[in-house]
View 1 (cartoon, rainbow, N blue to C red):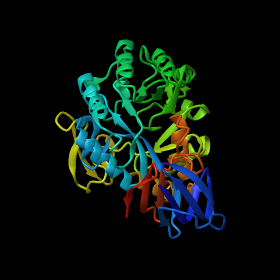
View 2 (view 1 turned 90 degrees about the vertical axis):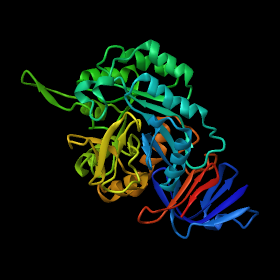
View 3 (view 1 turned 30 degrees about the vertical axis):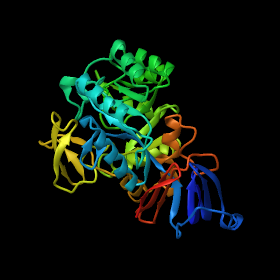
View 4 (view 1 turned 120 degrees about the vertical axis):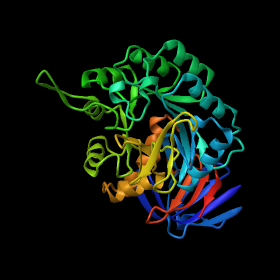
Length: 394
């Protein structure tokens, strides 16, 4: 099938181009050219963008759920419904994220993903699984259940990555016994290691980067910063991750988890090439203010309440994950943190693709997958195309 998208304001690779045409051949982008450079030709469909922005589709590296579903529920139908809902907000690819729980529940979540026939699924594409926990520090557990935390066991994580080849990332606190070796073992299998929920100091974190840790999970949330020990200042995880050029930094850019000045600081230090926008959304994403729901498995998880645009633990002692949809991240990064839109889009598409070593996604250019999002000045999603097929149209 051959498709032509006309009258688009193309944003790709940190640049904006007015009045461009995008040609799609089946599931690939054939060309992105000025409007005058593309003739009438023979097309099966022509989509008029009507001056809307067009970019590579958004990739959410870190999301636990949306629209009332959590991936820890381990229900195939719920996975399919979630993928359709992600597409409504411009997301063309997701990494479903688990959380700290008994391994039988983590395996059930992975089993549910393994059983889904993604060749017939609609909505955003399943790009692989992300295990957030249980290898975390109790001192920085946040909403992760402290009674489920443990140090990495090579027997356990090796079983997981061998049995579930679609596991693409595992997070851990690098100060725990076995965490450094885990990163080295995962690297041999092409699995990314993330630094998360950790109370390590800067020196340990720098050693973790040497060992292969490549993503800082939701920077500032659930990790140590500069502190004093016996009167002497010591750097924390935050400072070490900002310092290392080879570490990508996630940012929950919902305007709530991080104030504008910290978002600006991450952007100033890491730039659009190393800063990644993530929702870290739980099942409350897309639900109404005041809704009550559960973080984690619907039967055994933690009750939360949605208020002031975020999910809270019942006693309001900590956030329990965001309820942001991906369009919110784009809007907040531009209007709240005042980051130029071309860089914002890079942090939503090209940079996450590069962090996860996806050579065929994240760029609107010839030869890349035809994952395309159209949106207006208010970041209202007009159309989401995944693999050359329209999965959402307003």
